[in-house]
Image 1 (tube, rainbow, N blue to C red):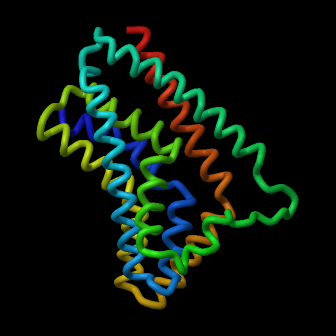
Image 2 (tube, rainbow, N blue to C red):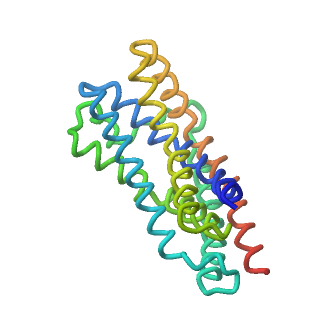
Length: 225
């Protein structure tokens, strides 16, 4: 059951990990004056926010393992709505993509990350993971899928922990590469940042479309039981 639960959460975890803006943000932080301290704080904040969100969903939908329960029905309806919303967001990303050599400008909150205070960096990590609408949908879907795999107690905690760690792997990995690799790592991470920033709309659109279709299908399947 534990392996099944982890497998059910894997696609959503990878979608969370592949979010372009947190990865761009952590690279900008690592290029700043307090790179080591702020990089670690951002990663800690990201993990805390994602873990808190997953825990809340696990508590609210704790009865979803019973297919005839109200919690299960609500979870299926939420999947349908969330899946449809992700597909709409994917279409919006594609519509708003830069065209014909248009330059993509970095959001204002990114411009001062290099000089951000410790408190701001920690808070930003928590908010980008725990208060991000896309992450909320993905985390809710993944955690509900874990619960529906009929895992409890320690197995539930392990499955949720694996989801959080997988969803954090790119942020934590960027910090680890920076700490271990020095200047060569900085050049590599900057190349990753440039790629993610330039292709942000396309990457996000593909991830949202695939996950949206998957979550919508799971919700419709659950309602048809």
